[in-house]
Length: 166
Image (cartoon, rainbow, N blue to C red; front, side):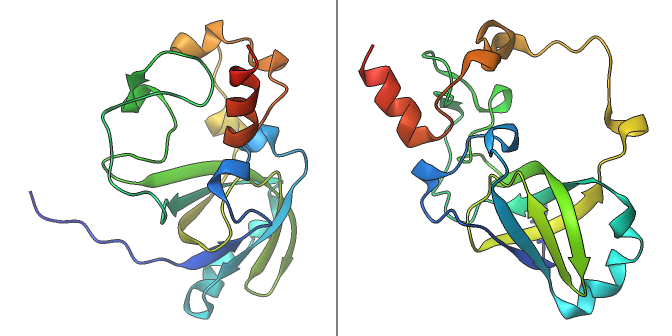
């Protein structure tokens, strides 16, 4: 197969510089704020984005080193296949996050509920559209058994610490 190349359209800025201290999902980001800097040559593509409350950011896990097809998820104690978890060490290190759009200023998007490392290359932005993206009768595999609503620790470092206390 032919290699596929993606060109970043911008960079994501956040308060998180260490993967171990970054929320494991944006739902756990507790209002963490950041910015999406869209490169000037792509800024025209932001037209009309200000009418959306949430965005789907697609980005490159720039600090991922290699991949493993079997890995332990951040929540849970058993190894899983990489395609059934959201770990960054993937064959194609591409991440997605749903963030809240707080403001638009030129080529900069102010966002919150961010769970992305500072300096992460942005590959694409898509609006979250409730009518398209919401599904009924969802099954979330092994995650359904994890009692996510009871998760108190929300970063890899904190989760590792809480597991060692068990």
